[in-house]
Image (cartoon, rainbow, N blue to C red; front, side, top):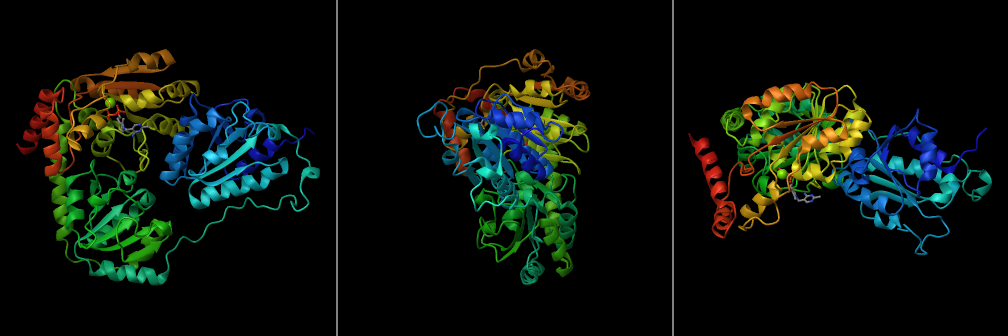
Length: 585
Ligand SMILES: Cc1ncc(C[n+]2csc(CCOP(=O)(O)OP(=O)(O)O)c2C)c(N)n1
Ligand SMILES: [Mg+2]
């Protein structure tokens, strides 16, 4: 029988924890792990990327979209360093991810050898579990504990593995006398995730007294669509959605006012400004200024992580547990709010808001408005589509104009708000769900950062669709420089790239859209192709992602930036003014 290496033990152990795909790039610091993967292709699929950052994003997205443990692999030194940004994305959006890295030969670590980076020290801040393999019989227990910790604490677990240990044969003789064979377990165990009865009763007492109740639903509420709608009906409460909670209830639900924050909607903002009671379900939405004033509303919060209770709003009651189960337990304790006025007002607000959005979406100007392509795409997406986005003005168009349908999934980098995850997220989604429609909605800046991964999609024959919103600028920052600080834009223009030609050069298909009148038809054609496709949409770079209501300070800064020599001030002033006028007429 062939001998078992320490790397074999690692891969067998993580497979026992449900790891079936690992994203990464080989290197001489992980040759032993690669060999173990080569021998186990039937169990664990290795997906080769072009940049390790993308591998970590893919692991994060795999966890987000499947609920399973995501995994990525990188070589010692530079490979491990490249993973970091994607691992922070997982850490900040609380996703279980296992990162495996190589290290130098165990007896040369710390001697200034090549690629001798002590990755365990580097990863100290990003991980919930972080260990260096100290010998071949160390691997089994480390692997079990790493997987258990990542899943239980919803974070990043890291094992770094000296290269000579990986390929070494495992024999019990090498074990220390206390290390008994197979003393750890790979049994996955969970608590009941139910809040205490006493807390449920207190929460019901607060909610039953409310008249103007608002619900804020986040990523943690994604599995609780029915329960959210039931509780909204009972409490006559509008559901306001944080960005990662976009799919918590569909956008056509009679209870939701849509998103909140700079890229949110006016009725959402009104609901939070006017509510007397706030129920937060699985959200740590970071923009405190959009929440009710601390003394305005009584608060109840449901969260799986007790540490997050009361994080952004001084709630009276915290319900520690799973959102779906907590809401199910809460429902029978609620009397029902007979005052339907608050919900009715929110519904009216939604109607008005939709009218404004629809006007933006049906503009026929050229250059095309980004809202047009977002809405045209949204209308065409299948009922089970998975749509990933990046950070930029595109996040606003994605949040407001791609309407979430029941059964679809949406994600982006929520709390890290990094550029570039849209494409890797979409690749991971398509690997996890070969039959579903997987679409990236990204900016030209973010896409260019990791666009080599489009070749990864071609290599693995993944029929992903990438919609690149091409405004030849780092749009979001351009507007922030003007609106937040009153400065003229600086350092934001991008050298244009022909993304459709790039897609073809990679072996995929490429389309260009620049006219609203043919936008739908080209999208139909592109979406029907069973190959990886890039659709670049040339849009108006002067279209601002306006907040639902502009503060006086923002307006003043904006005017100042124009006055202080903003190079594109004429076009910008005209575009903004025109949009405002259209909102009014
Ligand atoms: C890795 C990283 N670098 C920089 C930023 C700051 N940033 C946020 S949005 C943005 C512009 C994104 O440009 P693009 O992808 O073209 O989208 P647009 O805003 O033009 O729609 C920048 C530079 C960031 N969030 N992440
Ligand atoms: Mg751009």
